[in-house]
Image 1: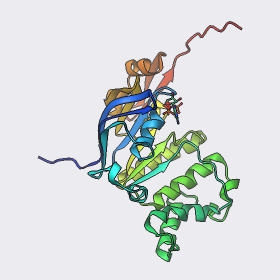
Image 2: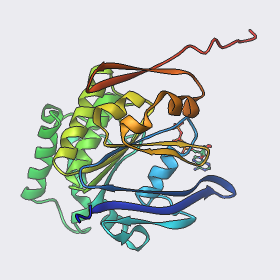
Image 3: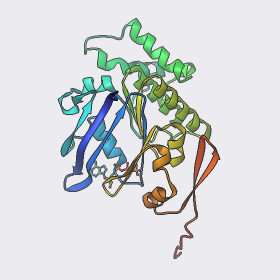
Image 4: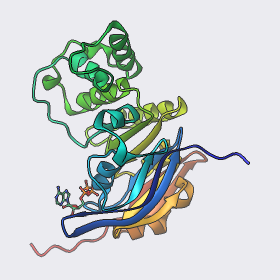
Length: 267
Ligand SMILES: Nc1ncnc2c1ncn2[C@@H]1O[C@H](COP(=O)(O)OP(=O)(O)OP(=O)(O)O)[C@@H](O)[C@H]1O
């Protein structure tokens, strides 16, 4: 029997902000090349879960194993060699060039006294070229648009050479065209062996690039599995409390259309 290698294993984790329980007893695992899309309504705890998965928050109970090692035993720079994290928004403070921002992705591999070497620069150039943004390299990061910044931040985490990418709403600042391009980039990165976890407000996106989907609501996953099994009209209704129509464009492509709610406003 072939045993699938779990790159990330989450066993029974719970988390609270002081006495406010956000989620409890969540368990799942992903393997090399998986893309997990986490869906769920606003305020349900997706970002909080993501912060637990990359060690920014300590869980109340349960364990998170990264390549078999408990995340609580790893230093920040050890975690950064395994996990590249792109938060929902990142406000740049200094006018570094794009190239310097991307090169900072090598930080986990350098000690405080070390400067990046030619090999580090080569890796940064490769990340910029992979994402098609090499032309931005001399621009000031502070002057970029939200969408350009998103891609530069992705280039920076690729430069970290992690096994797992964790992206919090990666398409939120991107225009219609760049959303689909980013999902295709995610697809290619997964094919090349990276594992990806992303949160999203777009259930369609799960059909485009995900191998697994989780729907988070009421402090737990109400479903977890393949996009075909999980992104259903019933599950979307339960998650978002609206009717949703699933339309099949062709055998490889489905879209989710939210129905009007006939909301009554007493204006
Ligand atoms: N630092 C914090 N301290 C206390 N409560 C917090 C903190 N961050 C988030 N919360 C609360 O935890 C709950 C979950 O928030 P979280 O940001 O994880 O949800 P989300 O599913 O990512 O939301 P959205 O889809 O709107 O981005 C919310 O009720 C939020 O108000």
